[in-house]
Length: 543
Ligand code: VG1
Ligand code: CO
Image (cartoon, rainbow, N blue to C red; front, side):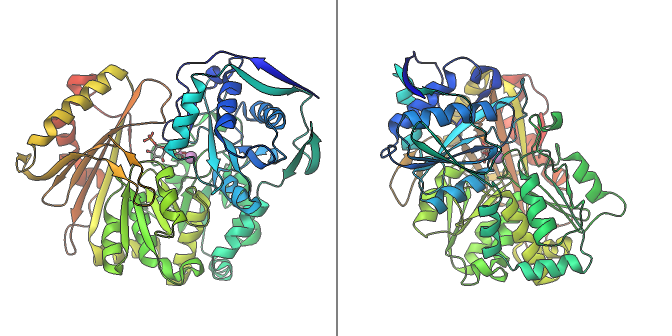
């Protein structure tokens, strides 16, 4: 165990995006690349020496190697105790749970979420702070600044540890505790929900399919749904985590969770279907013959939250990311609680959750969560739904009809144009930015523009400011178009275009979303000159 200080030189581009540093595995495999970024984090975290640090990832290719590297560096940087999931595995919400439970200084989470894995796939790393949530921008900016000046990193010369055996060992004076990745998380879930009611639901013959997409939630879902809640064996499909997710995109949406969608829309469909992503923080909700848009899911959960023990005292407030539909706003207005609109990315919910201003929040990108951890939480959302369905005794379709009948329906869709040249994407945004100020009051495709602006956010708790968080065009009939560039892609730029259309109570609620949104989608493409700037005539992914 010889501590060594290794000289290094900076790499370009170690700037964390919406959710940490994400790059191709090949980039991370370059000697010193991971080490530089980890040392940059360690150099910026106050109180690291003598602290407890949580380490784990979604199990994708390169996870094990990276965990060993980070353990050596943690020991050499004076961390007193490392808490690691067995096999180097922790889902993102489970890591958040363990950080909070152990009073850790934070955690290093290895994941590229829903991006494909394997030697030719993607890898990622992010730091979560002591509250269990993604490091705020002030910290990620500091990591980036440090990465540009780094000259050395500290590590140990030591053999790999056995991470497959539970229990405690030591590494160069640092205690290393290998924990069951599921136990703490499952215990937390049991404290939040009416497990008996959900167990009764399954015992009554209610059928569900949970698609773990060969990603991290397999063991979590099997333990909680099948073992603790008595769902029949086989409820969890694709439940064995694989380093390359079986060659698939572990992205729970209509485009990528094909097997699940086929089952829910096929003959003899079960009552309920759900899926989660690579690192377990996303969720997709389906009923028999019905898909629930994530924005609607947030709204329905808000409207029914008091049926769940964790929320029996009512909601403190809710929040959604800016591009998420305003369906939840209508629920908040009726409940008389605050609804915050934040920039994209879970890190912006942290201060609101910590301050107790909100206890439920979500994003249109299949992310829903609450104040039990500081990450979005896929399996938690599924349990929320099960608890609400059990308490209400309604099918998913009936619950949605009731909701739309009370609040009106907000049709929602998103088009992604992936891997377009950065310059083309920048030019498109710059041009549109220039056009926005003249749009208010004009007529576009038969709709009158109510307001058009670029979203900027001042955190109401700590006052921090985030500029340029997306372009939005709102219409007088309640519909809206939003444009922004992704901050999680690994090649070129990804343009995301979001649309919503509001149909009030008594309006047309029975349309297929893509049909209902076609005129807005066409208008969005024309307004931004998508074909002119990118040559693309249709999106790569429509969700
Ligand atoms: C995307 C989503 C965003 C989400 C982020 C991380 O970011 O739009 O809502 O928080 O991914 O999710 P972007 O910048 O590519 O639009 V995950 O499950 O990848 O950690
Ligand atoms: Co994810």
